[in-house]
Structures are given as structure tokens and as C-alpha cells.
Length: 439
Image (tube, rainbow, N blue to C red; front, side):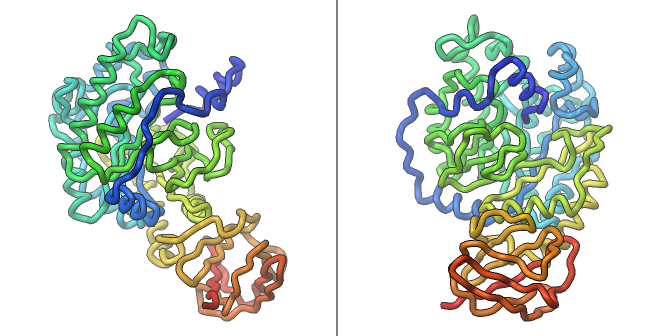
């Protein structure tokens, strides 16, 4: 994932990440197949997934950008593979943690910007099976565990590579390609690896690209790459964390550390919300990969706020963990996700399969809807004895507190609806009101 310092550097240099909001190379018209549309619908109903950033960088305990940030030469960094041996890795345990939290899918880094492949690859010996003493393919085990538990498996794949000579990270782009670089070789390499990922691990829900933003003016041959994915696996969705307007051939629009329509990070400046299924990704700490000194660990309440806030925008939340080099997910993450699971098991009806964007986000929270019910989520304390739902015109039959089934009074008028909170049961996580609509 992109570091904030990288973004700041762009601003300081007088550039902006929003300077180029489109992909300027030919893309064919894209008509999704019936199977693809079914996958989109299933994804749009999932609402909650687990992101996993795991690689040899975890050994250094300083996040997934450690090679770049500490300016470690590539040939020296590659030595980490010699002692990456995650004997405590247990795919079933990871899937159990995700499922218990109420997560419906897992998206894991198959290859990050350091170029190390976390799967057996014939396209590069720089992979976990051939280059480490561990000698096993964790993605194989994860695929089997996900299938057994009914969790959809997705693969993150980095377009950016700090080390390969046919990428040439520091070379400038001229006429769509990096100077003095065999760019076609790199494109062929990615196609070979994507073919492996889509043919050796069962049904893959999504290929989730990252790193495009490092070369927004490059010809990534996305027409060829997207066509390859759609041909090999028509049900597989494509997401690209490029921070620009969605490109034809993509099936999901994803937002990094921002809810759709927000731009707190600067990544989404000028990017409009599309008709595609939406997803926002965030992480339980500040770093995406394991950081032993991470002091920004999110609380249970913060994660629930993000989950509900995403659903209120009609988006999924992809919440990241960065497992330790031994293969275990940090115990504090496991504890927090267990607490989130208690919330989702009780209030999942108000999250999964719901629609969002009922009303604009309010200071107190948001709304979701499903069938003939709307769910008002009060995520922050309200000082007034009522809340107001602006421009809500659907006719309400009844209003009840989700907890305790307490009937609430409401007043409906052309400007919106007043819902009176007298008797609403306290809930420090999320006070939910159920509005049943008239037929």
C-alpha cells in the first residue's frame, strides 16, 4: 500500500496525485458476463472482508515499505528469504479468525512491492517455496481452508516492483514505457504469474491490483491483463487501487483509508464515485505489514464505526492485519476482531446485504436499508432528544429500538423525519433504530 510520506513528497515537489485521473491508453469496451455480474452482487452484499499483508518484510518488523524506507539494496534485502520460516502459520486458524469476526472474504498479498512472491511461481524463483527454508505454499493452504469454511479468497497483486531490472523503478517514463527497460518482459512476467494465481488455487473472487499510482503515465497493458483475467476466470472480479476514475474492465471501485466520497488522505482527490460495487480498505494499525512498534492500533469501536460507516455509503470494509514473521496474527488483533464478531453476530442484519446512501452521513452516524426496513445507526452521542433524517420521504409504518424492541415516536414531514429517542436503549458501540416502511 502507499505510504503517506510518499504522498507528501509528491505535494512538496509541486505534483499532485490527482493530476492524472484517467488511464490514457486504449481499453476495449467491457461487457461483464452473467457470471461476473453474479460475483459483483455477491461481493456487494458481503460488506466485510479481511485484508492480509504478509511477506518477508515482516521479519524486520517495520512495515511492508521497509525496503524502500530504509533504502535497503535489493540484493541485500533478498537475504531475508533465507531465514523466513513461519512455522506457526495455520491457514485454518486465520480463516477462523476472519469468519468469527463476521468477515466474508479474505484478500491476501500474493506479491507486494518488494517483488517477493508468497506462492510457488515458475515465473520467478524469488518465491516462498523456492527461496525460503519454509518451502511450502501458504496460499495453497489458505485456499483450501477458505473453501472449507465458505470464505471467498482474493489475491492482492502489486504492479510495482522495486527490484526487478525489467521494471527499473527509478527510470522515468517516456512514451508510456520506462527508459532503458525491457518493459514487455515485465508485462509478460506479470501475465505469467496472474495465470498461475488464477489456475492453481481454485476459484478466486478478485484480483486486487496496487502500485499503478507509481507510474500513472505508463502503458501498463491493462487491456491485455484485464482480458487475460476475464478469459481465464470469468467470475473473477478486478479491483485496482489506482486512485483514479475506474477503468473499463474493472468490477470494483476501491478507496484507500477513505470512505467513498471522502478525501482525508488526499488519495481520492477529484475521483468520483462510480456505479461499480464499492470497497474501502483500512488497517488495524498504522502500517499494513507487521510493525512491532505500531502505536496506532484501532479499537473495537473504531473498527465498528468504519464498518457501519462503509455500509452507510454502500461500500464494503476491507480491514487489514499484518501477521508476524512466525505466521501468527497479532494477539491484540485477534482479541479486537473477536469483539467485532460479537457485534456482527448480533447486528449483522443491519450490515450484510444492505444498501447505503439513504441520507448523507450525519454527525451522529448513518443509515442502511434492506427490503422494507431502514436501520438508523447512532454511532456518536446525541445531545437533543431526537434525530432528524433529512429529505427522507419514504412513508414509515413504525420505529423501534433494535435493542429491547422499544417503540419510538416519529414525526414525518416533507423536509424529512424526526425520530424521538425517549426510551432508546443505550449502546456504546452503535444505537440502532429499525424503521419499518409502509408497503
